[in-house]
Amino acid sequence: MIAAPTIKSVQPVEDMLLRVCFTNGEQRIYNCNPLLIRPQFRLLSTPAFFNSVRVDPGGYGVSWNDDIDLSEYELWNNGKPA
Image (cartoon, rainbow, N blue to C red; front, side, top):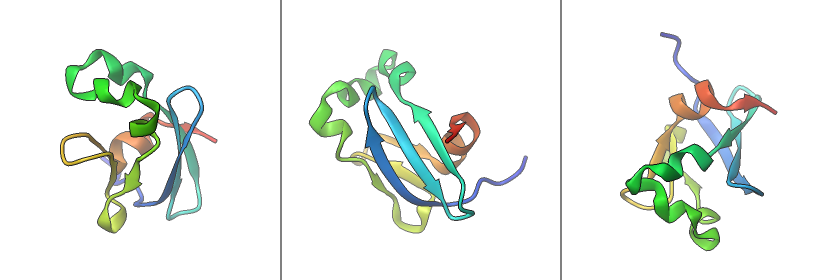
């Protein structure tokens, strides 16, 4: 398993997408829509909440609150190159 680079920045974009910039200079677009079927991610369907996403300290993921987060590995491996 190859380690994913850490995250430099994250920006919410339309249609429940995240634009994630990694420290290696690459960007990925991650679609959050499939997560909405899982109860713990349903709050992401609220636009103001979705737009509050932030990079975790150290760049090892992104989070919305203490309960809803995504790892750099998930975003790197399942995001589409931008």
